[in-house]
Structure formats: C-alpha cells, structure tokens
Image 1: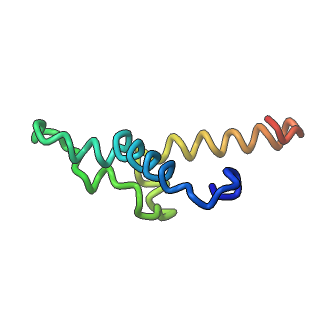
Image 2: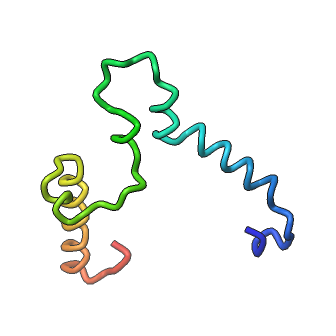
Length: 85
C-alpha cells in the first residue's frame, strides 16, 4: 500500500480496512450470533484458514460443486481457444 500511496504512513487506512473486514467476515458473524444455539454451524465450521485437502474436495458436498464449475470452465476454455473466456 505504501507503494501505491507514495507515503510510508498508511496505518490509518490499514486500521480502517481491518475494522471493515472484521465487520463483514463470516467468522465474526458466527462469533456475534450467540442467540441461535440451535444452529449447526460453529466458529470452527466457518473458519476458512485451514487448508483443504484433495480428499476433502471430492468427499465434501460443499466443495464438490465449486470443483465441478472450475473444471467445466477450464474445459470450455481449452475448447474455445480463447484464454479470456
């Protein structure tokens, strides 16, 4: 950010971005949502910081659809011959 702002003092902007990120992240929403104890999602379920394994890509229903979409897009791109697609 210092490169783009041409200034070494970007701490104010960084603090503002961190505050906005905390307000909009799913992890903070799960922490703030203490009223719904019946929900099956916990903070550990919402945490995306853990790496995903190849086995999880094929066994998890939540990850199977994005994997299929990514593979379909790559296949369409290869057949079209246009990388921008």
